[in-house]
Image 1 (cartoon, rainbow, N blue to C red):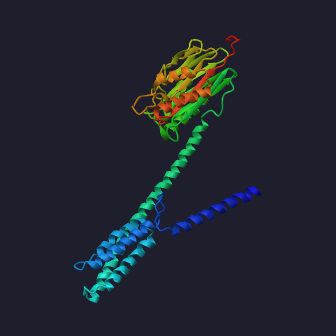
Image 2 (image 1 turned 45 degrees about the vertical axis):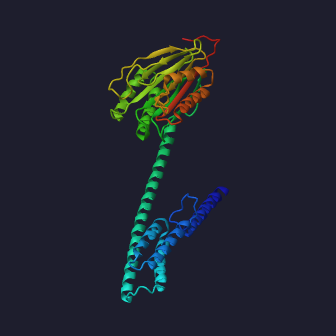
Image 3 (image 1 turned 90 degrees about the vertical axis):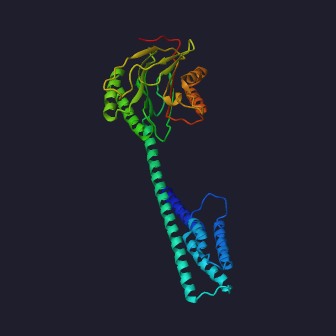
Length: 401
């Protein structure tokens, strides 16, 4: 019963608040409540005082009429004050005009001429206020339409971001001997980076990291196609060279020549303590060797995916030992720029890995991200993806073959 009552009560409270806001808006003097700290009555008082000043000046100057000066305060009033008040100020102009001229004995104007003069002035003032009011209303309507379209677009982007997150791994893989952590931070609402780790069997996992050329919605769409195709290929065929070749054909069929994907796919066998990988134009992954304290690079051996009809790649291999750390990343990390236009670069990334190799993968991943963010002032120009893998092999056992 409470599940039925509570939403109704919440909706009733929303209606009450909405009605309260509308009623308070109708009592406001201004056309639109702003965030300014000045009193709401101040524009009205200034405009009213300006009307009184014009009426008094018109009374004091005998040689010519200054009635046309009423258009100045009325124009300001039409811009800032509500419509009803703007037209009400026209009546105030006429009232003060007659009030001061009642005491004016220096002007002998025929009654008919005065009536014609006053009516023409009244029509002119009403026309001026009407034109300005119509212009302001059209501007407000345009702004409201743009805001609605912006809100709708933001909702679409949020939905696209939620869909994109579905392609990322939901949790850490249950592979004995490996500790894995990853993050993907788009430069906009959605991005063109992608990473995944796919369990093949009890001792083998496949690591994928990719970067679509460009940013925004178009890159995110191609990324989604890449992620879906890569997962299907991984479940169908264990030959990474064949996976890459078919992926190249599929991506080339759905994208234009200006769109391509850099990709690094690797397979780690914890039983054999070995990593096989294919790097298709992607940033070289870093392999920190715990025994020697040195860094090796898993370099590219072929062009990016979708750039050429045929993808001829080489399968490379590296041995692993307990304590080794693998760091996969996209160019959003190394190409992060500071205010002087300097890039974070692979050398600073390597130094961060050397300092933090003993950390957990989660902490090292965070350390790398924070180092790049501090360097560029947390103003990344591209999507940022970091994937860290740490080997926790049993030192008492020997590799199996």
